Length: 239
Image (cartoon, rainbow, N blue to C red; front, side):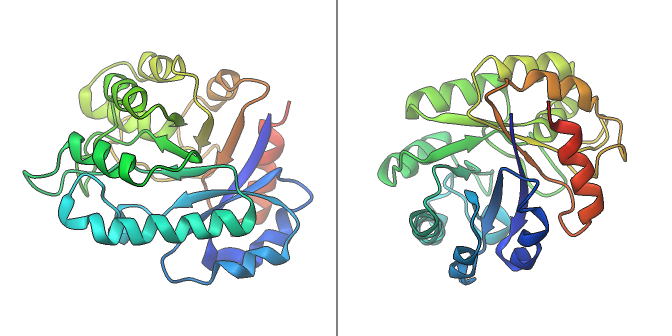
């Protein structure tokens, strides 16, 4: 199993602390931040496209202009860093014109073979999301012929909203053969993920670890500035 650490470009000075321990660094490409600073480090990268907090929302045609600029900027970063993966949040409900068809059309028009679609919560304190249930994830990913990233926390949040068994929910998603995984701790009853460090919530992290195949790749999404804690999390996931 390959284990990586999630950072933002703004956190790039943390990378040297993880070079000997992480197999890769996953970087969220903040719009207009200089991603060329990442090139100084000899490591493998996974790109995370900036999400809804930055205005990226393929489900809303009114946001397509900004969404395309954000995606194109991430493509430039992926090109520079030779990153094989670009993880994408498919979108959220902004208004009555937000549709699944818009997501399909946008991603088809801006197709890149490196794109991997990440499952999302169902309805957080911020927005309701698309691509949250096993049925949605299967349908959309198959129509686009794209792989998925299984985010354990997002799946638990969606299960909490829908009031269904979260382990069964995750197993259904895992049957879709994810290309990548995201892991952190949190609380099973919460509909919003909190990216807690391991052991600070009540997620069954041992069980999640066992679901990741030996050749799988997983990103730790906790608090990268807490270096000592993250190094312990990397060690926990090793096998």
